[in-house]
Every structure is written in structure tokens, then in C-alpha cells.
Image (cartoon, rainbow, N blue to C red; front, side):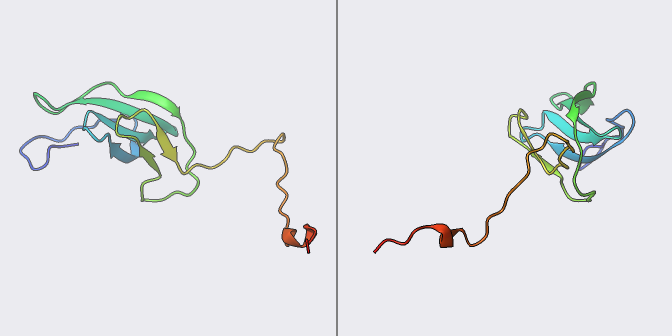
Length: 110
């Protein structure tokens, strides 16, 4: 990361790298997906200078399609996430039944 427009040096915010960085609306946190597949948050203090806090793991995330585009969205306060994720496989999953032409089964009234 580095200030834009400069001046200022460049520094790494993550510990082991990451992808899909996204700022919280007020600029007080930076979110990214860590190399281990964990949604991560870093608090930022831009009042004095650009200072990053310690990265905090939030929750595991599995992106459905690897993409250079944003794979998630975060609310303005940074408390909720909308993630385009791959569902977990489960043997307990209920089957999905799709009924076609269901209107034909409805009795017709005269």
C-alpha cells in the first residue's frame, strides 16, 4: 500500500499476501482474502499518517469462481458481507425438486 497521490513509501499490509482488497466506506478498515482463504480485516489509521493495524482473520471464504473482479461486498460499517461463494458439499443436503407445467395440475373452475 502507498498513499495516493504521494508522497509516501510503499508497505505491505498483509503478512502472507492476499487478493481482492476492498476498503470500508469510511476508510477505517481494509478487507482482503488472505492466501489461506480467510477473509481478513486490517484497521487503518489515516489521521496522522497511513498506519495499518494487525491483520485479523474474520472467517473462511471460498470464492466460487476465481476472478480479478470483486468477489464480495461489505456494508458501510464493515459488519456484514455479501460473498459470491462456493457452497459446501454436504451429504445431508435436501434434494431440490423442480416442477414444470405446475399450472396444469390446478383444477379449472367454471
